Length: 335
Ligand SMILES: Cc1cc2nc3c(=O)[nH]c(=O)nc-3n(C[C@H](O)[C@H](O)[C@H](O)COP(=O)(O)O)c2cc1C
Image 1 (cartoon, protein in one colour):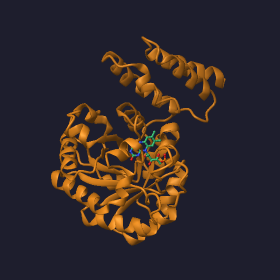
Image 2 (cartoon, rainbow, N blue to C red; image 1 turned 45 degrees about the horizontal axis):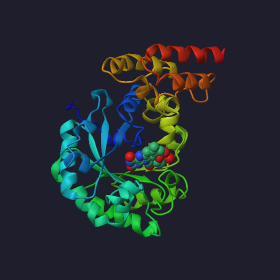
Image 3 (cartoon, rainbow, N blue to C red; image 1 turned 60 degrees about the vertical axis):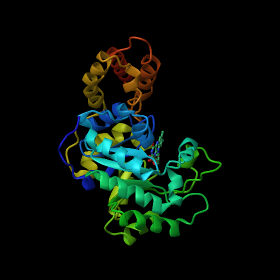
C-alpha cells in the first residue's frame, strides 16, 4: 500500500478537501482524486486509541491512487499519538494531521478535538511526539478559539507553541467552537467567521504555511483568499456537495494545469470501473454513489440524476446499470 513518491505538499495544500467523518471515506477520496490530480485530500478523523489500543488497522486502508493524502488523527496522549502516527506513516500516508477543531461530545469526552485549543502546551507535546516518530510532515487543524477565549490572544499563542514544536503547516477553521450548547453541525455555522484574524496570523507567522477553512463555497472565493496572502484554502461541504464545481475545475483554476476530466459526466464514467471493482469485492453500490449525488448540482436534470441514484442504489443487487439509468434520466429531463 505504501508509495515512495514524495509530494510537494505545500503546493498541493493550496487547495485541500477537509476531513469529514462519514463523508471523506476512501470512495469519496477516489472520486475527488479522479477530478483533481493536484488537491490534497484528507481522511476522516481516525482516533489514536482505535489504532493503538483497538488495533483497528483497517481504518488506514486507502487506494494508492488517492495520493497525496493526509491522515487525520484524533487524540491527546503524546505517546499514543506517536504510535498512531507511525502506523499512519507505515501505511504510506503523506501527512499526519492532528485534529484540534472537532467539537463533538464523544470527542470531548476523550479530551481531544477543539477542547485542545485550551491546552497549547499539550498540543505542542503531541506534535513533538508525532514528529519524533515519523518522517512525514505533521500538521494541525484548529479553530480560532473555544468558548469565551479571546481568539486574538489565544490563537497566536497556540500557533507559537506548535511552531516551536516543529509544525510547519496548519489549517485554521476561522471560527470558534462553542463546546457547550451547540451541536457539532451548529458549530460549523453559528460561531461567526473571522477571516481577517487568520490573515493577520500570516503576518505574525510568515514562515508558517497557513490554510484557511470555513464557509468557502467557490474557487473564486478560494483564489481571492490565496491572493490575499494565505498559503492554502481548505474546502469541506462545498467540495462534497458540488464536487464537479470545486474538484473538477480546480487544477486549472488553482494550479494553472489542465483539468483531469472534461465534464461532470466524464467524472461519472471514469468511476464505473472503480464501482465494478467494489461490487465484485462484495461492496454495495450506494457506498460509492452516495458521494456522487451532487456532481451535477446546478445543471439541467440534476434532480433526476440524484433521485434515480438515491432511490435505487441501496436496493440489493444494484449495479452500474443504475448509474447509467441515472445519467439517462438526467439527459431526458435536460432535453
Ligand atoms: C459531515 C462532517 C464531518 C466532519 N468531520 C470532521 C473531522 O472528522 N475532522 C475535522 O477536523 N473536521 C471535521 N469536520 C469539519 C470540516 O473539516 C470543516 O472544518 C468544516 O466543515 C468547515 O469547512 P466548510 O465550511 O468548508 O465545510 C466535519 C464537517 C462535516 C460537514
